[in-house]
Length: 470
Image (cartoon, rainbow, N blue to C red; front, side, top):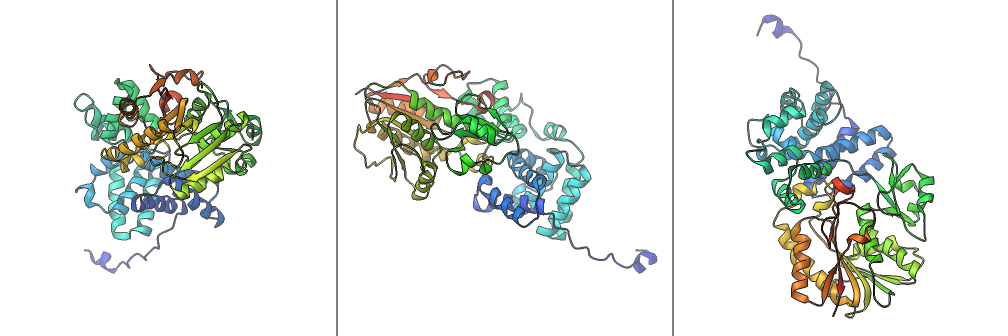
């Protein structure tokens, strides 16, 4: 060191600046990682708290939301890129450091934030939450990442499609390899279809409203906020970006709600399925958190029918009660196990069981679920799904209809379950669900129906309709 350098006074320590937007995004990611929380449940209270404290305006909230969801959706791709820029396996890097790196990678590769701003803001965040030492590591890694754009990085880190198509798609579209394989099987092959689906999973879903019949109208909702018509459901409206559903009076009062259009179609198809004999008693056997139950209850009320909404978990049953409060027709909410039901066999004319499942059909809304689920999870759901469908068929009278629904397109949770239960129980037949979704294209060969984000703009809901024959 030169004499002049030795005499130069050291730079004064500069306290890192707290950026409330990136601090909030980091806090949300840590909650997802540490507590297995879901971003769609963690983020709203954090944003509300920031607004109440005066730290955020609308633009800040939009940026924080994009940072959280964008980072989670592209986590697999960003992990592969970060791995190429560090000299040790990612499992040896502390998870909070990985979260800061992923947030930085998303700003560099997935947003229009200028490179220098993305790097400096991420390093400042690292100084606040990790300390100066690890902030230097973050700075070095992000500067390497900033040398190429996303396309160039993907070309570097993804194996060629011809050598390993599933792994290529997994890295390019940020899905676990086993999920890519399962979705590809459900689609029935073809590269274009699977790429379109995986890309649709990485797009921000629209907020869709439902005007519960007899309680609200699409005209009322359209007058209250900026919307577009629903694609398929007569009760649906799509909100303009940035709209706040909780500010709409009909939503506050429970006369309308937020409900994916695929979920609406499942309830409508069951309600409109042809029936022989009376139509007075309906059952939602897996009613939580209450969206389908609220729509079914409103439809039942118009016909003078009564809905029984059953949910095993008491806290979810309370959510169902809240969703159905004020319904004009008769209804009842109970906490009961659908595999050991308290009702007598043959008590109902229509039964819906939207069974617990892997949730692979809603990866647009819960992007973290793709990293949380494992193939063996399906083995855990299988007995429950079969048990619920078996009991649903017992619950319906001869001539009545059962709707089996899942928010998963995985064949092990859809057709395999239905075929297995039909073979084991007998006394029931599949009926064609496609005519009950009028105007909806690309519904396949039937008789069951699989909706897709890339084809229908909905969650990947599955529906099979079964009529009890004996």
